[in-house]
Length: 189
Image 1 (cartoon, helix red, strand yellow):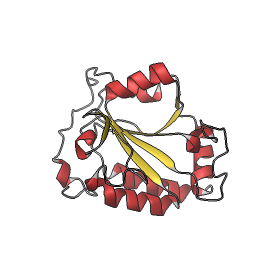
Image 2 (cartoon, helix red, strand yellow):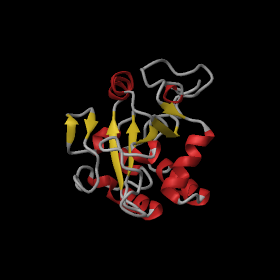
Image 3 (cartoon, one colour):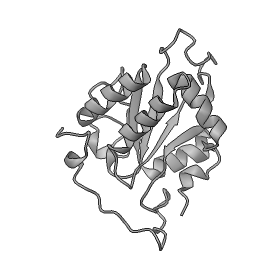
Image 4 (cartoon, one colour):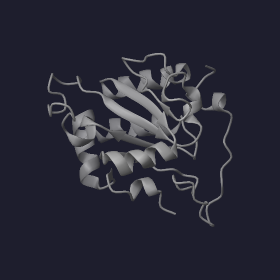
């Protein structure tokens, strides 16, 4: 079953969009991008999809229209979002309690203490700030329908579950969710 995140209107899954993201964020270095994605993948469970949005995807800021890295190399950030699973349980600060976190980053450095090592590694790999947010499938769906913001799918959900709560595909085994503190890059909060 294809993850609906990759099939919705503003979702960008084409190679050209991915290549533009790699060029903007990693200076065209595919190896750095692959390491970045694998680092994220090692910190999530199969129920989680990972997307990026914002100027790293569109090439310009929504407010003001300035180009990505307008203030110099490495000055624009990457807005990473975990969609689904139990990632919101790692957060202490929310826009909508328990379903849509604030982005852990410069403005909210302690929003998800267990994700600090992951964020530090991702910032190092990208050579720029990386903000990490978590949201539920429902909030992502509402954002798609109401906000029409483009996003790039970095990692599709691997459990066969649709983000609208549909049943897993018949040929896809349902993975069990490990305890959050046992995830490779996530320690105890």
